[in-house]
Amino acid sequence: MASRAKTYACKKVTSSFGAHSITGYGDASFFSLRQGVHTIIITATDQTGAAASRILTFSRAISAIDFALTPTPTAQRARSVTVFTSTNAESSQVQVCNNANDPSPTWEDVVPGEKYTFTNETSSSGQWAFSARFYAAPTSGSPFIYINRFNARFTAFQMGTGGGGGDSFMSLLQAQQQQIDELTDKVSALETGMMNGAQALNPTK
Image 1 (cartoon, helix red, strand yellow):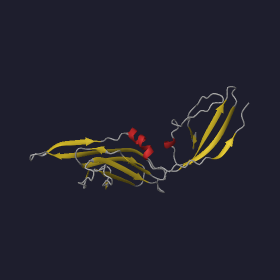
Image 2 (cartoon, rainbow, N blue to C red):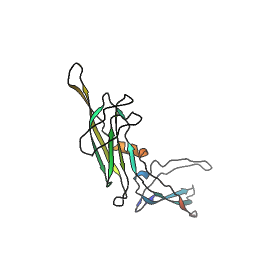
Image 3 (tube, rainbow, N blue to C red):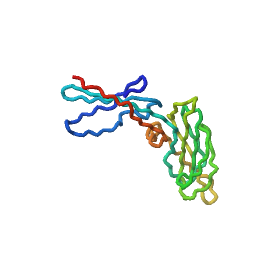
Protein backbone atom coordinates (compact mmCIF):
# COMPACT_ATOMS: atom_id res chain seq x y z
CA MET A 1 0.00 0.00 0.00
CA ALA A 2 1.52 3.31 -1.06
CA SER A 3 0.83 6.44 0.98
CA ARG A 4 2.38 9.61 -0.39
CA ALA A 5 6.11 8.95 -0.02
CA LYS A 6 5.69 5.87 2.15
CA THR A 7 4.97 2.26 1.22
CA TYR A 8 3.57 -0.30 3.65
CA ALA A 9 3.43 -4.09 3.26
CA CYS A 10 -0.13 -5.06 4.14
CA LYS A 11 -0.52 -8.81 4.11
CA LYS A 12 0.70 -11.87 2.22
CA VAL A 13 -1.86 -14.63 1.59
CA THR A 14 -1.19 -18.16 0.33
CA SER A 15 -4.12 -19.77 -1.50
CA SER A 16 -4.85 -23.00 -3.39
CA PHE A 17 -5.72 -23.19 -7.07
CA GLY A 18 -9.48 -22.97 -7.62
CA ALA A 19 -10.16 -22.09 -3.98
CA HIS A 20 -11.55 -18.86 -2.57
CA SER A 21 -9.38 -17.06 -0.07
CA ILE A 22 -10.93 -14.46 2.22
CA THR A 23 -8.73 -12.20 4.28
CA GLY A 24 -9.02 -8.95 6.14
CA TYR A 25 -6.66 -6.02 6.27
CA GLY A 26 -5.92 -6.05 9.98
CA ASP A 27 -2.23 -5.43 9.39
CA ALA A 28 -2.84 -2.37 7.24
CA SER A 29 -2.75 0.76 9.35
CA PHE A 30 -5.66 2.49 7.62
CA PHE A 31 -6.46 4.61 10.66
CA SER A 32 -2.93 6.02 10.67
CA LEU A 33 -3.23 7.19 7.06
CA ARG A 34 -3.51 10.91 6.57
CA GLN A 35 -6.34 12.45 4.60
CA GLY A 36 -5.92 12.42 0.84
CA VAL A 37 -5.51 9.96 -2.00
CA HIS A 38 -3.75 6.63 -1.39
CA THR A 39 -2.96 3.58 -3.50
CA ILE A 40 -3.28 -0.16 -2.90
CA ILE A 41 -1.30 -2.52 -5.12
CA ILE A 42 -2.51 -6.14 -5.13
CA THR A 43 -0.17 -8.68 -6.73
CA ALA A 44 -0.94 -12.36 -7.33
CA THR A 45 1.91 -14.77 -8.11
CA ASP A 46 1.45 -18.38 -9.21
CA GLN A 47 3.73 -21.39 -8.67
CA THR A 48 5.64 -20.68 -11.87
CA GLY A 49 6.46 -17.16 -10.82
CA ALA A 50 4.04 -15.46 -13.21
CA ALA A 51 2.45 -12.44 -11.58
CA ALA A 52 -0.41 -10.03 -12.17
CA SER A 53 -1.16 -6.81 -10.33
CA ARG A 54 -4.06 -4.47 -9.82
CA ILE A 55 -3.69 -0.87 -8.71
CA LEU A 56 -6.59 0.66 -6.79
CA THR A 57 -6.81 4.20 -5.51
CA PHE A 58 -8.94 5.45 -2.64
CA SER A 59 -9.30 8.65 -0.68
CA ARG A 60 -9.61 9.13 3.07
CA ALA A 61 -11.45 12.12 4.49
CA ILE A 62 -12.05 12.74 8.20
CA SER A 63 -15.07 14.90 9.01
CA ALA A 64 -14.58 14.84 12.79
CA ILE A 65 -13.15 13.01 15.79
CA ASP A 66 -16.09 12.28 18.07
CA PHE A 67 -16.09 9.62 20.81
CA ALA A 68 -17.20 8.96 24.38
CA LEU A 69 -15.67 6.65 26.97
CA THR A 70 -17.63 3.66 28.22
CA PRO A 71 -19.47 4.68 31.42
CA THR A 72 -17.69 3.73 34.66
CA PRO A 73 -20.20 2.91 37.47
CA THR A 74 -19.65 4.68 40.82
CA ALA A 75 -21.24 4.05 44.20
CA GLN A 76 -21.72 7.78 44.70
CA ARG A 77 -21.86 10.63 42.22
CA ALA A 78 -18.56 11.99 40.96
CA ARG A 79 -17.84 15.41 42.50
CA SER A 80 -14.74 16.63 40.63
CA VAL A 81 -12.66 15.66 37.61
CA THR A 82 -9.51 16.60 35.72
CA VAL A 83 -9.17 15.66 32.05
CA PHE A 84 -5.89 15.60 30.12
CA THR A 85 -5.76 15.59 26.33
CA SER A 86 -3.13 15.85 23.61
CA THR A 87 -4.37 16.83 20.16
CA ASN A 88 -3.26 19.00 17.26
CA ALA A 89 -6.78 20.31 16.63
CA GLU A 90 -7.05 24.10 16.75
CA SER A 91 -10.23 23.84 18.79
CA SER A 92 -11.95 20.97 20.55
CA GLN A 93 -14.76 20.29 23.00
CA VAL A 94 -14.28 18.13 26.08
CA GLN A 95 -17.29 17.22 28.20
CA VAL A 96 -17.85 15.05 31.28
CA CYS A 97 -20.87 13.71 33.14
CA ASN A 98 -21.51 11.89 36.40
CA ASN A 99 -24.85 10.33 35.37
CA ALA A 100 -23.71 8.55 32.21
CA ASN A 101 -26.27 5.72 32.64
CA ASP A 102 -29.21 8.12 32.38
CA PRO A 103 -31.21 8.25 29.12
CA SER A 104 -30.10 11.89 28.74
CA PRO A 105 -26.82 12.41 30.62
CA THR A 106 -25.93 15.87 31.88
CA TRP A 107 -22.82 16.77 29.89
CA GLU A 108 -20.71 19.59 31.30
CA ASP A 109 -17.92 21.43 29.49
CA VAL A 110 -14.44 21.30 31.01
CA VAL A 111 -11.05 22.83 30.26
CA PRO A 112 -8.35 20.15 29.83
CA GLY A 113 -5.76 20.25 32.58
CA GLU A 114 -7.97 22.16 35.03
CA LYS A 115 -9.84 20.62 37.96
CA TYR A 116 -13.59 20.88 37.48
CA THR A 117 -16.40 20.51 40.05
CA PHE A 118 -19.61 18.92 38.77
CA THR A 119 -22.77 21.00 39.03
CA ASN A 120 -25.14 18.08 38.40
CA GLU A 121 -26.54 16.42 41.53
CA THR A 122 -29.32 14.26 40.06
CA SER A 123 -29.62 10.89 38.30
CA SER A 124 -32.93 9.78 36.79
CA SER A 125 -31.74 6.17 36.62
CA GLY A 126 -30.45 6.15 40.19
CA GLN A 127 -27.21 4.61 38.90
CA TRP A 128 -24.25 6.94 39.06
CA ALA A 129 -21.60 6.53 36.37
CA PHE A 130 -18.78 8.67 35.02
CA SER A 131 -17.94 9.29 31.37
CA ALA A 132 -16.08 11.81 29.23
CA ARG A 133 -16.29 12.67 25.57
CA PHE A 134 -14.23 14.52 22.97
CA TYR A 135 -15.07 16.33 19.76
CA ALA A 136 -12.87 18.12 17.21
CA ALA A 137 -13.21 18.93 13.52
CA PRO A 138 -10.61 19.82 10.89
CA THR A 139 -10.07 23.50 10.10
CA SER A 140 -8.24 25.38 7.38
CA GLY A 141 -5.37 25.93 9.80
CA SER A 142 -5.32 22.30 10.95
CA PRO A 143 -6.76 20.11 8.17
CA PHE A 144 -5.14 16.90 9.48
CA ILE A 145 -6.22 16.29 13.07
CA TYR A 146 -5.49 13.56 15.60
CA ILE A 147 -5.69 12.82 19.31
CA ASN A 148 -3.09 10.65 21.03
CA ARG A 149 -3.93 11.17 24.70
CA PHE A 150 -7.18 11.25 26.66
CA ASN A 151 -6.80 10.74 30.41
CA ALA A 152 -9.41 11.47 33.09
CA ARG A 153 -9.16 11.33 36.87
CA PHE A 154 -12.18 11.95 39.07
CA THR A 155 -13.22 11.65 42.71
CA ALA A 156 -16.53 10.61 44.24
CA PHE A 157 -17.17 11.72 47.82
CA GLN A 158 -19.49 9.82 50.16
CA MET A 159 -20.85 11.43 53.31
CA GLY A 160 -20.70 9.24 56.42
CA THR A 161 -23.78 8.31 58.42
CA GLY A 162 -24.57 9.44 61.96
CA GLY A 163 -23.05 12.88 61.52
CA GLY A 164 -19.74 11.58 60.29
CA GLY A 165 -17.70 13.43 57.73
CA GLY A 166 -16.41 12.25 54.42
CA ASP A 167 -15.21 8.72 54.74
CA SER A 168 -14.30 7.53 51.28
CA PHE A 169 -12.85 8.73 48.03
CA MET A 170 -12.61 7.03 44.68
CA SER A 171 -10.07 7.89 42.06
CA LEU A 172 -10.92 6.08 38.86
CA LEU A 173 -10.21 5.93 35.17
CA GLN A 174 -6.86 6.14 33.49
CA ALA A 175 -7.53 5.94 29.74
CA GLN A 176 -4.22 4.62 28.44
CA GLN A 177 -2.74 5.02 24.98
CA GLN A 178 -3.97 1.62 23.84
CA GLN A 179 -7.52 2.57 24.78
CA ILE A 180 -7.39 5.38 22.25
CA ASP A 181 -6.60 2.77 19.59
CA GLU A 182 -9.57 0.69 20.75
CA LEU A 183 -11.81 3.73 20.41
CA THR A 184 -11.16 4.12 16.72
CA ASP A 185 -14.44 2.40 15.93
CA LYS A 186 -16.16 5.16 17.92
CA VAL A 187 -14.43 7.95 16.12
CA SER A 188 -16.86 9.56 13.72
CA ALA A 189 -14.66 9.47 10.64
CA LEU A 190 -16.07 9.86 7.16
CA GLU A 191 -14.22 7.16 5.27
CA THR A 192 -14.67 7.37 1.55
CA GLY A 193 -13.46 4.24 -0.17
CA MET A 194 -13.79 5.28 -3.73
CA MET A 195 -12.11 2.60 -5.72
CA ASN A 196 -11.36 4.16 -9.07
CA GLY A 197 -8.84 4.05 -11.78
CA ALA A 198 -8.29 0.30 -11.50
CA GLN A 199 -5.36 -0.60 -13.71
CA ALA A 200 -4.62 -4.12 -14.86
CA LEU A 201 -1.05 -5.15 -15.66
CA ASN A 202 -0.27 -8.05 -17.98
CA PRO A 203 1.22 -11.14 -16.29
CA THR A 204 4.98 -11.34 -16.48
CA LYS A 205 6.46 -14.37 -18.12
